[in-house]
Image (tube, rainbow, N blue to C red; front, side):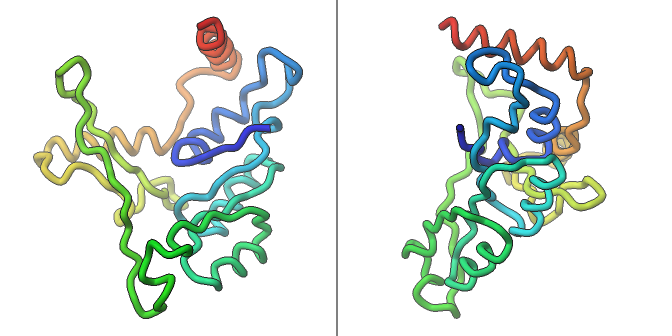
Length: 189
């Protein structure tokens, strides 16, 4: 069994694709891809929302809560059916772990620009964050390069919304064929 780690794996976009695919080769040939994933890690958003997303797509593996900041979060995770947890900030890299009155300061580093062969990519990295029940990226969760012009930022937001909406552009058999060929290419070296 392999783990499902965020941010992409475990997103609605990933789940929409994974539920349509089967394992193309090996001892699990023909099994649904989601059936060979042993654990899924919640990385952002509420514990309940991630659990609901996994339930929606019939994921049966263990769930790992990673937004553990204070002892009460462990209890909430356990009560929500999570069997695994990650606790970086809880183990001391956040002042909030030692003093509940303090703020949790994120030490995450975000990529702002990508260069390919010395040329800046026209596609800026973006964090889509969670989406609302209506399928729109939540305003406070969208992150992109703050030095982009208004028109560049608008284009990044629109592109991110298309990605977050995760509407398939091909049917399941075509998607399976693409997956089979990509995996075969990777495995052949």
